[in-house]
Amino acid sequence: MCRLYCMKLTRPLERVLRVFLADVSARRYGYDLMKAAKLPSGTLYPMLARLEDEGLVTSEWEPLPGDGSGRPPRKYYQLTGEGIRVARLELAQAPVPARRVRHGTAQPMPGGTQ
Figure 1 (cartoon, rainbow, N blue to C red):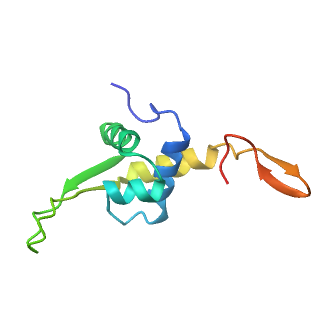
Figure 2: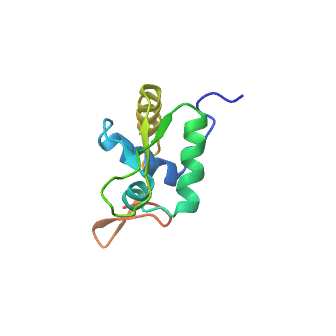
């Protein structure tokens, strides 16, 4: 079994880790993560499953909402203590996207982020 560091730090994973690290005490549900990380569900949910398999994220279903809204329960995700440590370490080692100068202003390289 692969234990920690089995996933390559891709741009989508970097985005998700940054969202989690913005407030490590916050529990986040899937749709909230999708919006914050600007990722589709087909990218996000397999990533969350792998992070959970690695012991870097925990998940928990909320109790059925009793507000009569008919909304289904949400599954909340949160980094574990080890997940926080690994996320900080990985992001600290992540390469900074290269930038080039165009007309006197720095512009992101193609494929980089702003």
